[in-house]
Length: 341
Image (cartoon, rainbow, N blue to C red; front, side):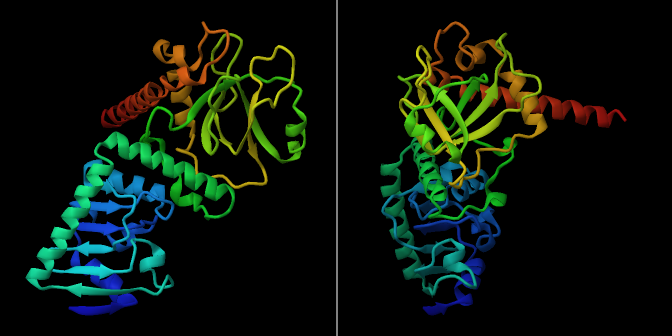
């Protein structure tokens, strides 16, 4: 057994090429310390506020959901390789393993019996994790909840957001459920706000309105797009992201207005990174996909007198899938054209 401090911990972890990891927290720089993720057979993390949700999403992209397990109360920090294991206080974060992070203390073990024991302990943790989150759906749901918790923490500047690291390309985006974000159309409207909304109107960056019966969640993104009178996407108006910081149940007080619930993005609060970047190609794919009949019935709702949020959620997975199909077909056509010379 060897006692490790400071840089020795980081070097030992990289050197042991861990195939099994159990840590309370994982950060966005995890691959700095695990440069070759192909060695990873299984990793257990706590899906609580100390773990960065986008780090977990990146990890899943690299190794797949079947190799990632969640255990809420996990506090252990263990890195197990073929011939050695590192056990101690260091999480898989820059704070835990970075040169200017926290002061950590670990031990490296090499003895065969000790390795058997730590692997047995890992198996026990994994069994507990599988009991808590037995399916990919349950893990995605928990990760979505963690994203919302981080969104609230970023909005209130409890957690700092590194936007450059966190905005995925649309091609890399994986929805965590049909309610990962809202997709909402709007038309410009002049309306009378309630006194409560007027009190913070100078802090409003953007707003969107809902029916009084819609169950709207705070700390959630909405992909907002402008619709024409013919129920088509507006040609020149680009879809954009709106982050819901605050909700006013009766924020609009116009008589007869069907959408009195007002969701607001505030200028004085930060926002987390949106689910994906809306590039020109993404915009084109979105405007094309949202007009598909089976998608439009959920996201346009032409036959309904009032837009229903819950019903709209059923169309989001199909929208994402169709957009990816359009973009893939376009890319394949471009490649074929290049090959023809």
